[in-house]
Length: 401
Image (cartoon, rainbow, N blue to C red; front, side, top):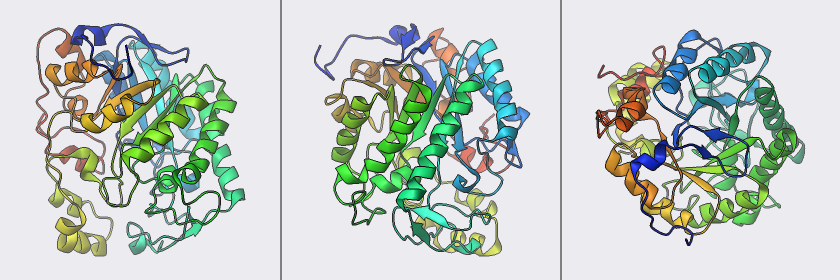
């Protein structure tokens, strides 16, 4: 079969065991809980709610559940009490992995670095590919980023590798290197934020150099059989940003370097946050969650102009994702509007072996099990996106329950 050719897979095929790429990891099915920030930690330490959240997903039928935003250092956090990989957080994460395994699932951690997108006052100097204005953290006194030196890049790459190695040692089955959504590695990939004039800026070959160096360090630390996924934008959703052509180039390079699979996504958190989410914008809750009066006033006055709305439809990224599927052989994880039996069968027939979900599983962690047993055919999530607001109110949850 040629790459991306149509096939006759049905939903039943998604419930069969599958190995991720060339790695040693075999999942009980094709379903992956996408990394979506949970907001379940106490002063940076994963709490019992986070453990229970991922255990329920495993019980509900997910083959691989992904813990979101594991910052690779204290300086890599978007805010000061966010989780990062250290001795304290690893103790709770080990318990999480063990209990997910007992529930019949596998555990992955998304590893990332905020770059210039942060309001963490404990950071002395924001790092980024170029000097950039940080609107997100400007009210916290973090106005501009420092262009990274080669020494900075080497340290950050080692932070990714060391964090990945430590997660492997406590029983995690995979790691996901976050190269999307406008965080540090995505900032290097995007021409909107990478204005460098050296070997790390300009062409997509140069802009992808540092993210690929990070991946190389991670694979060297873990070995070629350990499962390393990469989350990568199909596009930033902005004119002049990272494009589908850029995505295809980087995907081919990831394939050559030994990446097990690519989770295809999209959007730039500081510029097009709802390009990925789609649906309603919970502006009232976002205003209420502001961490300062100035932030609340800014969001109240300019929120509708700052946060663009994108209409929701099933499989909203599929047309873009198929363009990548036609160009690369490695496993691709489809993400974006996989909300029903019909949508999933369309994804499988387009040549994708794995399907990632977030909101349908936030609404009902047993969605996969119920779908497979024929109890339901479609998620009841209405894309109100109020679950995003709940991330800052003690932990992500569906308000419809």
